[in-house]
Length: 279
Image (cartoon, rainbow, N blue to C red):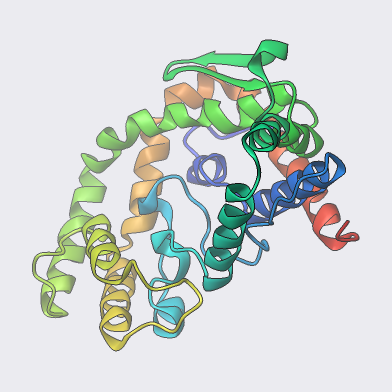
């Protein structure tokens, strides 16, 4: 179908990673490692909150989410279960003799000397080895490794246009509304959503994602969510970023259409994998 170059929806779709894909990749890696005689503990279940946007300014915090979960997964905090699995994995690796530990990482990450697939974009060259369980999982989800590189790294060129989006007149107007709202809420220094989130990360970042929020975190999150709502800052930024990226979207129209198709198919495969037998 024909893409609208200045479409905020397209930009938002390009700049997010659905949690299902990460969860399915973890499960595929674990299966692959088990076949080679190693243990790899699955890190995530695919039920994580948050949208997984690569730019925090696109990740809207709603009043309902804030009142129930504070900042939830928006601060990148692992759950207590994830922390426990990480500690168990560290203990497992520490008990492996050095040759077996080297074999573990060779099985997991592959050997680049065997061969690799690469992609060159404005931000640099990106590559992935053709061997290893991580690459096996990516191949299963994305169809092939070049699809994975294209869908993962080409959209990152949009990140170079963030400054232009923040300078947009409508964004600056929304930021003024947001800042006034936060002053009224009792947070005069937190004049942008990213500043509010950074403050939350400093104050509350140690809390596991699945633990209940403190009243202080809930209060800040509610103020942030309400001010995002009245200022419409998330939508304003998304529209400005799409406008700043319009030339890029026109130049890469065929790639963008292909990436969206690759992502949809990867999500469908991830759903089948997560709903199928564990092993």
